[in-house]
Length: 281
Image (tube, rainbow, N blue to C red; front, side):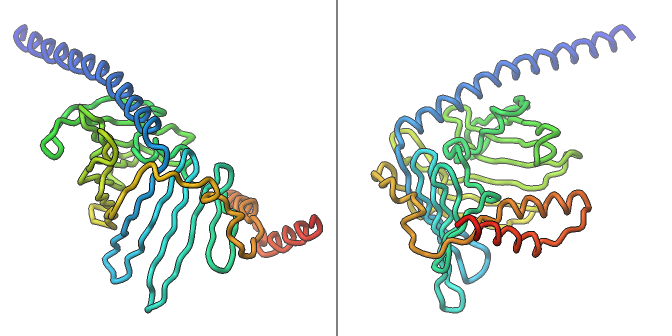
């Protein structure tokens, strides 16, 4: 009995020592992520990338992304039935816009990432949420931290997130979203990292899995940095197409009605809003 108690105590002490060691590793991870982000912000003034979204069909959307500071723009083009279709999603630093050949419209409900570099490296959740280092393991032959972040009750996303980060350069290799029961809901895998500037690397292939099945694959065709993109490139006023009313307030109201079970007429609300905007002109 004494031998058993000693063994249990030894295991408990060993587990405590491992947990204490990983608690120390978390500060290393946070400092490494911050240093990496600072390096990107300091050296990359703007970025242009071209990606093809593979959906398992003949029509493969091509997305050209432009970034400068906290402003960003995504031009998407796709050929359907022999006809080319294009649209632009633009964040000018204040508002988000959806633009095509027929119209432009503010789309507050589809806000572009405000903090692009944190979003690009997909590690902002680790900094902002309650996180801990679970273990280290090999990814692509390199040592990686496995970090778990738990979402707060007030967050839209529920459950937790696990991220695999390179121990040396903190490249993000994999993200797994788990529901509150610990079941995987989505997985993102980042591969084929290449140098884009000095020691800064970006993934050239990103795969998304849902329900354990490959949902889509993003293949980067090119990345160019520090091209001196003009500020006007992120100005929605340069597109001379009819501007549609901002319906974000209506969308929010309708969402609240649906959530609360209230009965309301979305069409009537929309018509009333149009009349109010017309009076203000």
